[in-house]
Length: 144
Image 1 (spheres, rainbow, N blue to C red):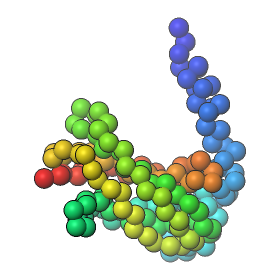
Image 2 (image 1 turned 180 degrees about the vertical axis):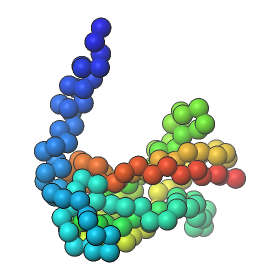
Image 3 (image 1 turned 30 degrees about the vertical axis):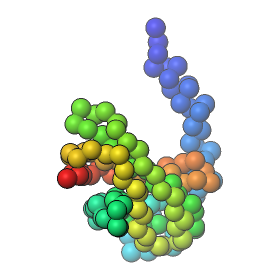
């Protein structure tokens, strides 16, 4: 059975990325110090490393992002928690609005995650376009 072509067709019919990416902009950033340029599908960059912070009784995974696009957009940021075997144990989200050239922290709530070490995969999706807004960043997080 030829499953791979069927999966490709299913993926392309479900996620028509090319049409969404064209709405998002047309060009990658060429000068890292220049914030005003056209945006491509991957217009958000992670700054530094993700850290755990406590606010009262709550714990959050904090990550700083930079909007390298010339425009503003709403982004849903995801944190996918996996154990060593690769099994997903939690998915956290937070929505943020980034303006052009802005650097901003986002805080994904951490709850119902047992003590241990996890690989956490962070990425953003631009809400208006349902298109990727960042590459995936993997970090190791230990909860005591």
